[in-house]
Image (cartoon, rainbow, N blue to C red; front, side, top):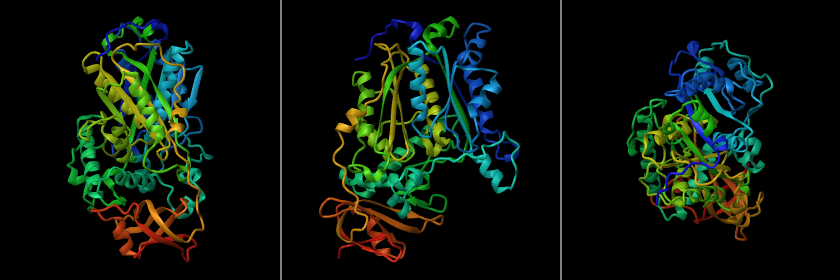
Length: 515
């Protein structure tokens, strides 16, 4: 049942998105590249122009110049000592709230939610969330040995790495990059869903093909070419295997130059500025929760309780009805595959209005700011009383945040809190102890195979359970072709199969299947 049109009880404390701005800098000449802070400025100015389309004349000073809360998404390609300060200097503003976010793919969703909460609490009138990356230009300049004449980088910057947050055993086995960790969920879950690896690969390829079609329709996408499922799933010279079962076209592409910004005000101010009501997008609320940061300290890899709790809470905000448009985070196929099952969506449901991190592009932490812009456009052009879901996640299926947007006013004021951590924790089972030195029989819990830049196996990884339920991590050397072949067979999952671990010359546990 659709929600009936309603007016907010207090327009002065009703947060609405009024403007969105995006810039995609396609010039491949690094000498012509724009630095991230310039992309941020351009995105904010585009957001102002978007907001004031149809507004009363001379309303602009109440937006960019009126920003009293500025959140900058964590930026990696050219780390500054103080990005918010640089941006404020360019815009000639002095917001009371000025912050630089911690790293995380979900962070733009959180920042938008927190901006809405400040407006709802009466602490802010004009809020901005902005981010940008120039990874393509930086990489091209390094290759050409070109010094970029940009604002100084922070000489002491130390960007977050996987090794900083993973268990020493994961570091020792070389499984600390997201591209090597997410397949552990993929391979555990396909077995739990009673799929063959071939069936799971086909689902991923079809899902990603739909993402590429969305990117092809998005003028801001880095790659605007629709690809068929076979082009995505089949390894080849330009689509090498990365980590089983993911090919290059199934993983996020960070080599882009992109910026995006969102402007938010109270409904009262938006109407005073003369912004047409049909261009306003209301923030209904959302939810957040986290998994244990150490992925070896989780109960198992067949679910993500934090994701489930967050999505359930978001769906409850719309009365359990399906969302009209949505963005499910898509760094790797397993994330939207899990999410769409929690939401009860069919396999062919559109799961991205933006195009996904493989095809639209992955400006690292800032993708979800672009996704917010895509959802705003969809709601503006959609039928009345439509609702959108913006769901992001970060690290290793760790941090989850969802936000519900609508082109209709919310049925109730924005809730003051958004954590559903308690609900997530209730869904979690006991965590198995880690067996670091165990040698003997075990069964496969999950696995992957990591490939080198030529698409050849580098090593395999098996996470297994001992007879008494403990968890261990073990390697398969590239020379053990028979074991690698069993790990990558398409007709039958090795999850649950028996094997043996033993200490190898490199000091790590190695895995082989039982005869």
